[in-house]
Length: 457
Image 1 (cartoon, rainbow, N blue to C red):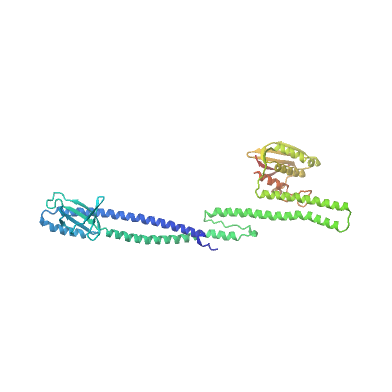
Image 2: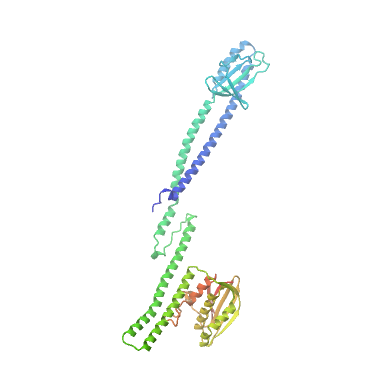
């Protein structure tokens, strides 16, 4: 899979950002280096100017008579053409007479701090200094000494340096962009590989997982989270397939009964009472199917994450006693008794809590022996309230405990359903518990079975 082009590509955007960063860094570095070189040249110029001034002063100090002036001129001529820069020297008396230097004297003297700027006749501005000789030398007393330096060699050096720096910076930017694009594309190969693996996952291959990129600390959490999502999707897909198969299985028997009954009833003329009996049988089956559909819709809403509404404070022991009165007929048919022990206050949906208790009590009554006592144990453990229905009876096998809260699952799978029992009762209990921030639990010990759920207190 090739990476997309244009600015929609991560590699292109990273390359552009790195190019901008490189331009900024090289530009700042070039500017700072230019300023540093300029300061070095200015410092070197000041040092050279100071040295020239000392040399000129030493030559002047050697003049003791008019016969020494030709020697002074020769020395100053040598000084003017020596060194890395071109220097100009003038000795001017107070009356304007030029003792040494090109005539006329530079017409413009512009102060620049402790320095002077002198403009030669050819228009070149010189940087230099000026001072007057004292009376220690009667021959040159009061003479003004002007020393100027031609700045063009320094400017030319800076120009060549700037040109070379610009070329180096441009090559550096191009090299940085090229290397960054190469490194970025190389670094994004793990993402492209993960993308290829993800695109190969289909509904029938949800068991596949992404290969964890061991060399990438950034992509490792992303791949792990994606694999966790795949695990949840695989579980949900398997649950959906099982759910569809269970629904088809549960609907097949009542539909077959109604179809066969209708075919038999229509096969010949039958009296009205017999037809009424067939319709009543069909109506019973349809009511059972309606109950199952309602339960399925409730479970679908719970799976979607819908929370309970109409929450209110309630006393769990009072609700258990009220539910006990509701299922009293079921218990009396099996000569069973109910006892409520403990209490807790919760903020929950009263209808849903009662529905969970009804399902647990009817389930416990169904599996408890005749004449047994069922106990509703209510406790509060930290932030959770626990509701347990305890009934005597044989221990539930571990494999049954793992599946007993699944939809359409019945411990006696070979036996047909009785009444409106489709194996959704305990699944509804788990859905109600999770809607209230709790979960279900089951425990077998000492000839008793505890099945219950927890709620946020």
